[in-house]
Length: 266
Image (cartoon, rainbow, N blue to C red; front, side):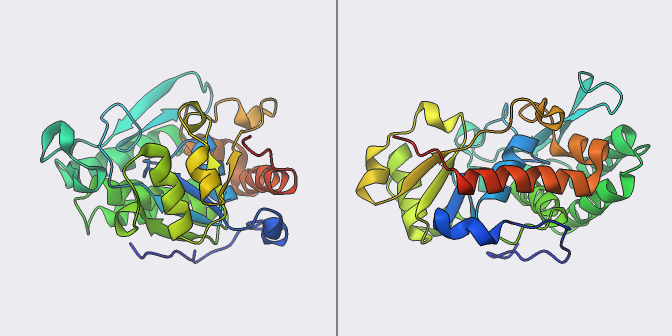
């Protein structure tokens, strides 16, 4: 994958560039997730750049190699789409080092399960436009992270995101958790770090304050139906359920609200 990403296609509503100066350059730092959840997709969409955190320890119980697919008719009925992954150094294996145990089988399972869940959706063509480049990537790599990254970028491309993609392993940063995140933001010229709800539990504000980085907590809407399962299932469910235009509008609305009325971490 290139270190910068410009999608081939754009949606009706794109990244809210007109309000970006209110916050400055916003970065999101996140591990590559396979067909990420809507909450993760929304955070990446709201950022000007995504710093892919791929030089940290691989976690089998996380979303780096799996996605939870929900049924169209009953979103409470779910199934894991998992990519069988080999860890060359056991538990010490980094995300960037993880390898697909059987790329051909993983590709087949990915294609079958996504079609099984969303093939009957009237928005199937939009889902297929996201799925196809991921299936093609299986033919060029055995890296689990590459596949996960491709799936996230395909979703971002479909909704017209025009941000920049960088990788943590190529950037200078200290080892402390919060210190490292602050350093990565500075190294990319970002002035704002967009932090998910999970990260707010451990984040230390001092390293960011010392470097002049503002921390903005990212929250998804709590009432709108499309966001009901945003933190639980893959964004593919939302795409198949409401279609590309409405999904793009929903993401744009959240990003615009965040930039126009940011709630800084104090």
